[in-house]
Image (cartoon, rainbow, N blue to C red):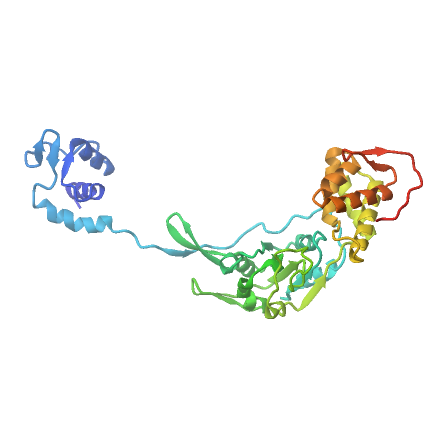
Length: 384
């Protein structure tokens, strides 16, 4: 293609259906094809000139067929491409948390994951007792890749298995976290699985240890050796009647049946929890064995009262850690406790505060939620 045809094609592409051009427009077309000025064969020829600074580019009829033939080639839009993104993800091994203290059935879950045998595990227990952290820290110790998916009522097949995304004008298929974990032989954590809808049923074949067909790209994915599934929930997939875990759903029985074992995770024993709190206090620069002792005893009494039906709320291990961090900020036991239990209703909050003043005899609540120290006196230690 010669320079003249190149210029004509560019002019048609930039100004479709236009036949009359100003000198400025000719310069703009010229610049687009690497020319500095408008072509002399146009501006210096009476054949193309219509008037002062105005030119009829296709006055010569011999040029038009060439231009028309080339136009279709220039303006034709490229076909959309459907690509599949390489789903390999690196650096998914969790960091070891120095303050973590194993308890409960930590060793059992670790043995399952360590075996690299596909054996789905369902872990249930009250909020804040370390279900998720247990699986994370097992993967950290075993140096296993950890894929955590937080399930909600909106979670669907596209979120789990993958779907199309628009990238730089191209439609690209992205593998979802489940497929990534399968391909890399990682540990898949389905966190808060009892919040799921029936859309979670797309995982049925995967929970059987089989591969799955990605219908959108007609690709069959087999799990790599070591692939494992762990699910955590506050219920056993039967919903929550007491209203504590609003939003939890009744999961399909066939789905639940694909988990061979169910582990009931409880809060750590007082001695273990004290060790956890001591580590947290030390890590924030506030080592205080007495405070750790008082906090764990206080939480233990509350939990026993809760199990007996005496109260409707509970102090989780996670909330004790929150109190430790508030203590590091404010340097005051009672203020830290009150700041962290303000989320409860007034009656419960008052009962919790009153109980702590009985466990920690030197702590007395003031009108502003701060504490003062008094000499030890005989105090009724009845919790409620």
